[in-house]
Length: 116
Image 1 (cartoon, rainbow, N blue to C red):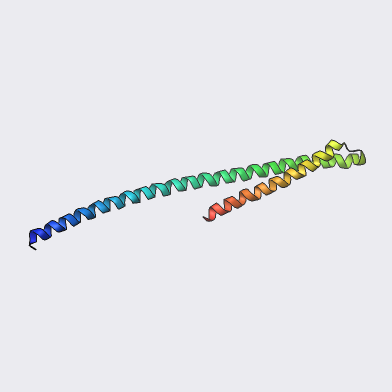
Image 2: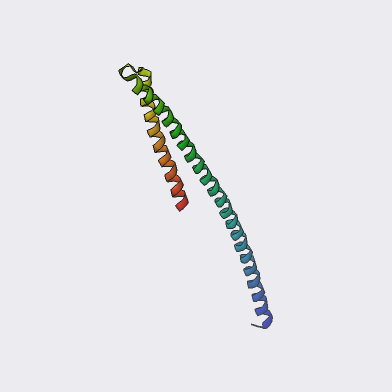
């Protein structure tokens, strides 16, 4: 094998390496773009989880205030309490428990996503 053949083969190998390097760079750029998009989605997801948790806490607090007022009315009227008030008290307690479970679920999702 003479020097020109060796140079020809090395040139061909170099062209292959340049092509493969370009492909690797393209894939790396793509992966960086995907990583950037995933970071943005994570921030949005975290914000949504936080907003949802705040909203559920507000609902629990508002229902709690209504419950307190109805319980005071029930205490004031005793045995003569309007059945509608008694039913409303039961309904609010049920709703508060449902909201607490919902809040626990939302907070668990946020904690799970933050670990990943």
